Length: 407
Image (cartoon, rainbow, N blue to C red; front, side):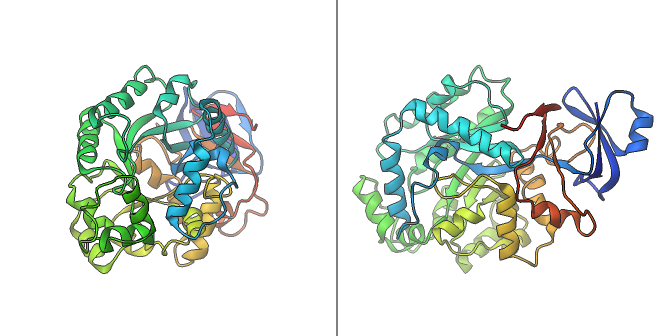
């Protein structure tokens, strides 16, 4: 099949006016000007009309489990209060509620042109009851050992058991030791070793809130009190160490990890990052705004060479799963950042974080045919700025070469 569009935004060079993309067996086999592609390729042609054709968007961090909690938690006075709220609501959800929540999350993500999503699965056992996901999905099994129901080794065995038999699912599987305040150093190391052994990726929440900084560095605050009440050992708190310093001391971070948030950093932390491991970073602009977290140090972190990708977080702290809205929020906070770099944070950069830089995030020969089309009016001017400003549901999506209906 050949798909013709007014503009093809490949993210692999300049936009192609009156362009076309050839697709076969779920992959891109040709890209260029329409007349050139048609001269090289035979096959049916679908003229998409006056649209901008670009790669499907990639959500670097989400919690599809919590789609059902949309709008149910107003902003709280503290991050610990939000944790209490969400844990209270989660107790009322059945397995069927969670499965419906995940399914609704897929519909919402696709509605906004997302074709690949990295989601933290808080209940890995649910994977046994799901069909293959409708989007390309990386499932990160959440690990927590504050009041554990299983020993650490059994927890990992259980997670990997849920992955087996799903090798044909689009995407992949990983582990998510939740955060250094909910995961012991021992479980963190076991997770890293298991992921390295089995070729999986890892994801962790780190330095998200001022309360996390207060807990580790000062040994006090609402989060400290909450974790202490749950029986967590607080021996690693109150020693003047930042959350990043505590995590780096565990010696687990490397290029396999996506670190989510990283809002609370000191000058000493930036010095540590200059000489530390090069992990990936998932920034969630609207969730950060919901929690009133410290401003994300985008320019400094990018300047240190970190790969920064955008995520939506969950609908328990966001109004939609639209990566366009995340790009708009980032643009408003950082008007100095070029539009091309912002769009890369929702395409190329999350592909790198998922170790898929050679197959996702661009329209290039050999890459997956995950495409979206936007009927943008008045294409004159900066087409990338107009893409970022998109505010409607995406009417046309191609996933692995197959049209994905709106619904």
